[in-house]
Length: 174
Image (cartoon, rainbow, N blue to C red):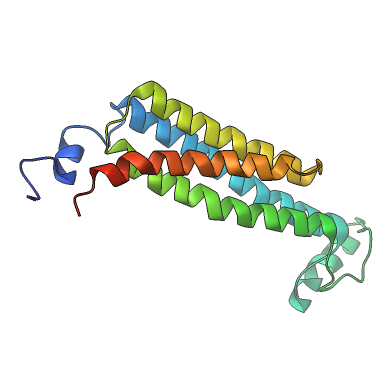
């Protein structure tokens, strides 16, 4: 196997445009990945909002925020929550953790998948299905919707990643 100037190499994939925005598959991956990352960042923001709303902070040094809120005349639902578990906050934290466990692999596998030069429609469906599954997962977790809604939405997104992995594994020469 040769690396560099000729053959089916990563260098050629970059120079021939597989990883440029002129490739609609790469551009779609970039767009759907960005939306998934923004959704993940939104869960961080939601967690922070819930911490301020409930006054439930993880460490003693965060008590400064409670004092600031009291000075501003903003009260929390319970001022003595240091270190206590709050279901709303825990749901947001667990949702964010699940995003980390799924969105990062999606992006990495997606980058390798683009290198296999898949058909545009097939790639687009993988990206769409994954993003929709993450949105449904978040809704199912935060509302909460009855199981197996959350499990099915996670499984659909996970299956999308596995499905993108198949052509990658087929292209590897062991």
